[in-house]
Length: 287
Ligand code: NDP
Image 1 (cartoon, helix red, strand yellow):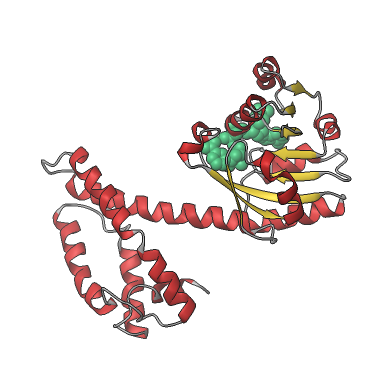
Image 2 (cartoon, helix red, strand yellow):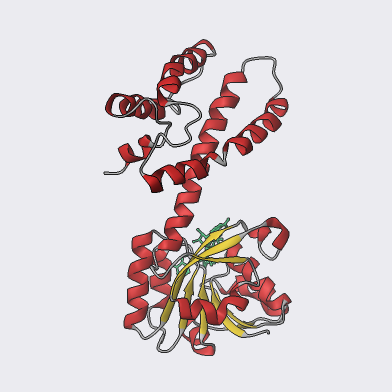
């Protein structure tokens, strides 16, 4: 059921989103601060508004995909949001999302925040698996779920407007930890006669095999019993850390990515139970 909507922001992401709605025969009004970016979309059937206020007036569903929260503030100032459904796909912190939700409510709009788990080439390509975390008004989400699902998958994570941003940042933070580990692994073989291209598939396979351990971690956190179904004890793993640090030293590789995690493991062993695995480290991180 094609619908009618407004999109503010035609950067790399906004443009990719816009194309999918046009391709699915939706009536789309767009606005971008730099008008030249709208020209190509006009040729593809988008209506181009001269101002953000005019774009907002054109529809009740308003999707925003701008650089950051400050640009959202700037673009929406002077627009009339009364009775609108505002969907903000701009990356923000949970606190910014909550403040924006309150700001929208004060202006008479329903609010849904989004965290995009995709890069532009994944937009409109369901096989690529990209999706958007949504949080905020459940009524808004239910009403516009189909339209929002045109460019990317949708995952609603709660009424708290900050939860989409929090899930987004949590997943990306885990990704950086994984990439840090992979960087250390590549560094270890850098000076050897080992083809990085032969290490890469082994790394991908190993990381994939290890990833499901997060389910055991979650189970332990829920039960409060960190010794539940432990396969590799903290005591054993801490005993192994000198092997990792000595190997790094022998390969001429800085241990700076690994050391902070090992330090936390040692602290937990000192304070906790050696029969646990690594779940106790989480409690050391939370102030
Ligand atoms: P771009 O840098 O390509 O585009 C930024 C957009 O914001 C442009 O439309 C720009 O307008 C606009 N903008 C910047 N400042 C202002 C302002 N003060 N007032 C009005 N408009 C402004 O970014 P993307 O499209 O890639 O990203 C958009 C959002 O999507 C970001 O929050 C990003 O974090 C998020 N995202 C992006 C991903 C990606 O891989 N690209 C992945 C996941 C999320 P102008 O053309 O006039 O400069």
